[in-house]
Length: 347
Image (cartoon, rainbow, N blue to C red):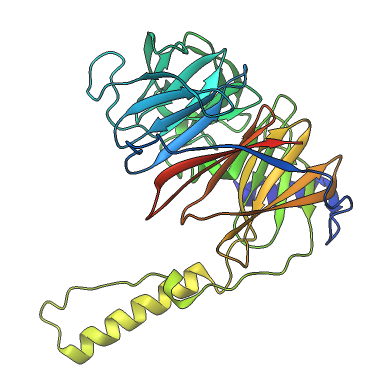
């Protein structure tokens, strides 16, 4: 997709927006911590996912126990439901959780479970668009269903309705049924945010993201100077190869070559942009790579300007952030607490 956007930009042209290296209104966006959700003495298991409902309630999916909790903004538990299994409304392999239409949607591999806020099961819906598996994205209290192979699939995306049906399709102008089988798969949900007016997309490497129209045709390309963060040696991972019939020296050379290739493919630096956190109050929130493992950094973009950067200390190992309906949720876990969700109000 990035190559398609680049070629379009070079041929047809789009507006280049160079953001400032420093925020223009530093400190203008403030966070107030409202709660830390840990499920009290019981604790969540494995990992958690969370979202915010339109009424401001917070929904947490305990993936390990396949249980859904609904809290108010102060952390008071309002509802608890969920059962592991493969029957109607039962959860087996949850991938993500969303909220729209004041309902709760839990995505699995090939289906989505829909519940009322009190846990009443509404429907189970197959996640197929024109015969292709779909993945869901959430923004502005809408759920967008996108084909795994959306770049050359029949549709770029559709909008999931309250009953789970998918409609309001945006057709792919480049669709060719003869070439539909020879496509690459959709890479990562964190690379996109779909809005009513267009699509934000990012790619690996330098700080750069693109705003496109709803046909994925670039309108604006954003860049900004960024102090890149080098990878540590232990962040590359290690390739292990079975020795088999090889001699020790030959085996060592094979492994060394494989690990050198891995390092070359991953590159010396981390990606500058990690993920889109969300859009709230007409501001785009982007998590960038931090040079401090205990400090999350989120750029705030408003009216094509870099206005602020949120710097949020965290105690966990794998923080994931979402901003929605005036709240910032950070899912995380550490050895002392286990999985937890920290809730902030965005002022």
